[in-house]
Image (cartoon, rainbow, N blue to C red; front, side, top):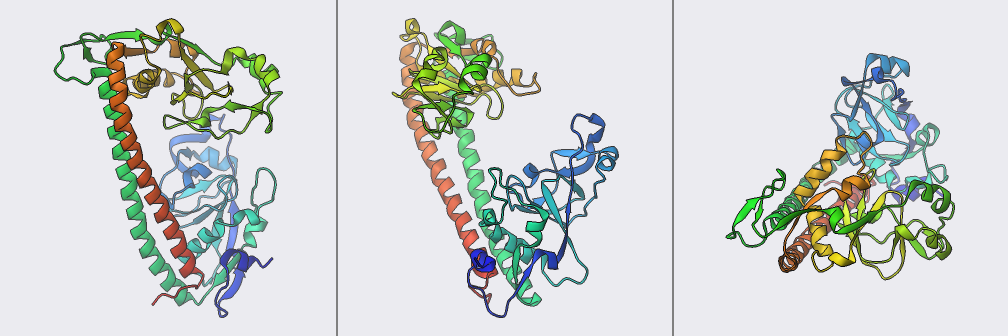
Length: 437
């Protein structure tokens, strides 16, 4: 297969076909031991990891910074502002430009320009953005696809005259700047809608729907005043809270996970933005499930991520088919004797509120690895209105939240359209399909 045609399609005959190695030397960094505190400091030299450059065109700061000792430990170069970075692990082919001096990890290559090169830096960045769409064609083809310096050195480039490169990059740069501003505007609107949704839920589950009722002190500072006929209670008084035990995972579940059986395993990634996402990566059979009855999902409940990324996120599980908890998700079932006092959906809304998040966060800050124990979940306090008020709150919030979620979805679709338009514009002009007038 012709690499140039595969990436760029048909290009003008008078454009040169070259490779990265004709213009740049490649430099790969390294990672000092994170277990040695003296390698890192809050005020050190920026240290770029993949996460620092994912979806970021310009790098002005990094999560981690290195001391002189950390830099010397791995004999790292300090790269100057303006250096182009290229990711070869994880987010393959991502391109960013340094706007500060920095060092890099081994997952990233720095492109150091050779003397006397005739390629416009911004034009190159646009070329690499196009190549990213087909970068797996060049990866090593293993389960964990990666690139290496040799592959990147030989990535094909299409090179018009320098003046044409500059003209193209200026035009495309100006157009993408406008598109980026439109995208940022949509993102800001989404954040405002999410903030309003959060404040609405928080207000209604703690204060009810009638602002004219008499209020009392809840005696919980992050809850504040509540209607006089509301109570504050504990999760443990009304629910059964459990998870998959460690030995159950080690001795039973982990030995029987596959991709073809009937019972889906519910992991943290299935709980996102208060929704249950039906996208499963592991399954077990009925024989295995029968050994894990306590952590089966066989009735309506609330799911909560209790460890790792997304800790504290919640969603309702209400499926007819049997599912199974993974080791990072807990379930909260309403006790049968309390079903006339508390609605599962009301409890979900409360657990989404600012008050609930504040209490959960108190425990997260006290641990190095973000996690919430079953004891903590059982001990969470919540506002308990009479069941009639709960039902009114549910009806009101279901209607409001649905409308807000629909608006958010529309704006996300608009963002997708703008990203696709941006990709198309870059591709058409940078590959010569269209000319800058």
